[in-house]
Amino acid sequence: MDRASRQEAPREYTRRAVSLAIAPECLYSDSMPANQILVLAQSESIRVQLEKALSAAGYVPVAAGSAAEGIAVMRDRSIDLVVAEGLAVSGSGQIAGLRNGSVNGVTPVLVVAPARDVEARIAFLEAGADDVIPAAFSPTEMEGRVMALLIRAGRVRPDAGREDAPAELVAFFSPKGGVGTTTLAINTAVLLAGGGTPTPGRNGSAPEAGSGRVLLVDLDLQFGQVATHLNLTPRFDIAGLATDDQALADPELARSYLTEHSSGLWVLAAPTTPDADARVTVDALQTIIDLFRVSFDHVVFDLGSRLDSRTLWVLEQANTYILTVFPEIAALRSVSLLLAYLHDTTPLQAEVHYVVNHIFPKELLKTRDVENLLRAKPAAEIPYTDVEMLRAVNEGVPLVISRPTSPAAAAMRQVARAVIGARSDAAPAEKRRGFFGRR
Figure 1 (cartoon, one colour):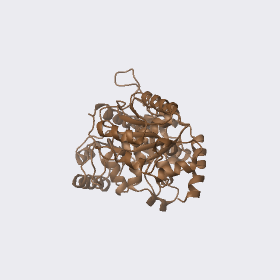
Figure 2 (cartoon, rainbow, N blue to C red; figure 1 turned 120 degrees about the horizontal axis):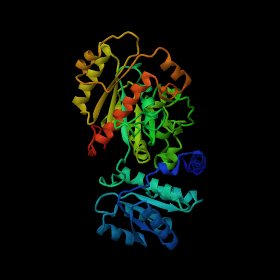
Figure 3 (cartoon, rainbow, N blue to C red; figure 1 turned 180 degrees about the vertical axis):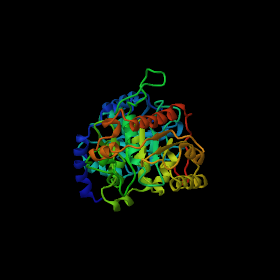
């Protein structure tokens, strides 16, 4: 992007951010990691403002008055991030010195620049700053940018933060297309978000439907139909976000690419043209998910039926897998081949739930035959519906909302319960490295 384009870009991003309707509580304000953050500021008022915002978010601010003093501090203390007033790091090479001043490796630097000085913001980025925030920042914006940088740098403390943070990743996939994977992903995501009709809990009192912050990512990148199923017309999609460098470095701008559904579910839509899928690289996808995991309780993926580098990366990282199964020999054979391939390349590291979807009225295989072939009991069976499912898709209203008392909707609630159960029963997972060499 040339200098002129970069000067104009913030205006468009600002318009997107203003139109964004994500509530502040979608950020993570309950309990934050006790990371130590170096605060550099010549201005006493800015220093106090920064320390107050960081302390309120649960971080430990460590003050210094100059870049040289800050580098000295970094040699003695474990600093995870530097937040610096622009005037304090305006000298030649000071940002680079801070980034490389710690014995623990490269430390990200967030610069606070004058609110309306676009040239200054560009200059700080060109000098090596990892991100720039205007001086008239809000506490939630500061909190979001700090967390995004810590995640990207791998500096988030593993034993801190919310008990349920970051978001659980739930992957819906089937090696055979046309078996209802998108329908299952959408209805489950709506239930997790609190849409649909809740059902009594196992103890007869607490509802088992969710009421959390849920993001649904349409990763069927060539012909994804999540937006169609939800009757949404997104302004932006994942391909646009993947190629927007400024949004990838700014959680607030990145959230402007999401579309809200009336159920409370948020959607990151698939590209509108098939050729745009090449713009979504594995690196861009990882950055996108890192940005959003801190703002949601669940991130649900509709992976479609194509196995590629992006699908494999999600399967490596996912906490729960939902494999949609059609009860006939060829489909079950495809599932078997998929599991064998994943076992040879990257073993599944989370619980796998099978969902049998009866898309034809005549039963091709008995349930016990499916269980014998899978060597597992399905988490749910979606019964055949004559027109309910087709009507729900054509109307753009998920079945758990339009026909909440139907047997199919009840079965989908079983899927949502399986996801929530896997989350509550699972031990804290260690951060794992996939065969792409990424965490």
